Amino acid sequence: MPSSTYRITVTEAYLKKAQTNWLAHDPKLRFVSLMLNDKVVWGSRIVIIGAGLFLTLYDGPNFVVMAMFSLVLLGSFVGTYRMKKARARAAQKNTVLSVSMSEDGVSTSSQHSNANFQWAAFTRAVAYPEGLVLVREAAGVWLPDQSLIEGTPQGVRDMASNKVSEYSVAS
Image (tube, rainbow, N blue to C red; front, side, top):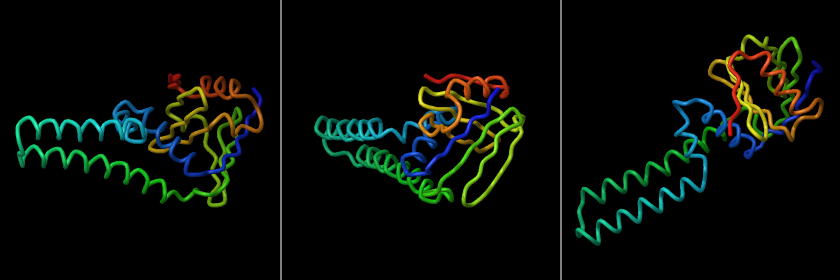
């Protein structure tokens, strides 16, 4: 199989998409990935405020109910803030990351580091309509199709499905 090369500019948008896909691939963390979807976050905040107002108007002011709704609403802001703060601390931010895939494994290089991994190091690969997530232990890399400069998206998916033991396609 031919090799494939990605040239990824690590921006805030890339990090947010990578973080979303990384969390969504793990069944235990899938719910957390919803905190990165702005429509879900703001929709839940509106529902929380609406429910709090309804209960206050229906039952009168109740400190316990208002405190509960206030804490839930505050939690939605804290969760979003922590995700954004984690992206801001990313060492690779505002750099260019090169990822090369071949029959032997995956090589990454950037301004900060270079690494080579055998295919056996990757425990899971998840194909999305717009790219691929390769998972290695507690880390992973998001490979968007738009950053592919050598090879084809289908070739990358075929290589990952042949080399990684747990390969799945996300909807």
